Amino acid sequence: MKRLLIIFLCMILSVVLVACKIPIGEEKNPIKVPSTLKVNKDGFIGVILPTNLFGGENVTAEELKQQFANDTGHKSKDMYSEVKVNSDGTLTLFYTKKQYKSDINRMYQYGLLKQFIDPSSEQNVGVTSIDKVVYDNDKLTHITVLVNKTFYPLGTDRLLSGLGIALYAGQYQILAGTNPDDWNVTIVVKDKETNEKISTTKYPNDKMYDAQSYIN
Image 1: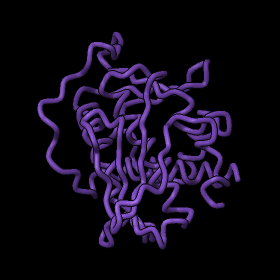
Image 2 (image 1 turned 45 degrees about the vertical axis):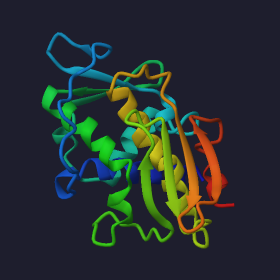
Image 3 (image 1 turned 30 degrees about the vertical axis):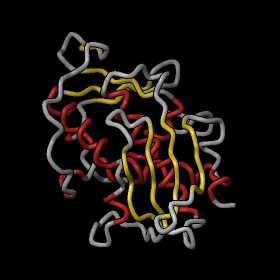
Image 4 (image 1 turned 90 degrees about the horizontal axis):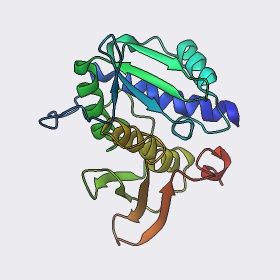
């Protein structure tokens, strides 16, 4: 089950690293680097990703970094300049200003899951129930997912509409200046036909990386 979780996390990150193949829409404008993000002596912007944004206690930063390096052949240097595993288990991504602006826009667009649900997309993974993702605010703290209730119990769809969106929203929030320990998002899943509320889930939570919970 741990292996399944790592593969899913790498799949999410893999989409980030093939951005040049996916139209991401117009850049939110203008994008300014928030004062809460530190710039090192070499001029790179350091963005810390907390452990609850890439696997919690189930997956270490080193494991994810190694698995990602083994399973993908994409040029991560195009997206960020360096990744560092910190002593406390967190990750720090170092960006140029240009990379930073591209990535924050990318996270905003990717949370809509168009790259997964569009039949013409190379990243489509056979998602059948997710119809649309709606941001209820620009901070990405409240998100609504419209689904076909009949097919929604499928494991991949539930992973993407919950954990997948949460990872993109969480990283967007941190890039936008939210303290890494304070990112949060509430995801409401509704039936697209009846508007019936199927579930409400707040992230991060203790079970977000329990892959079995998305299958049962």
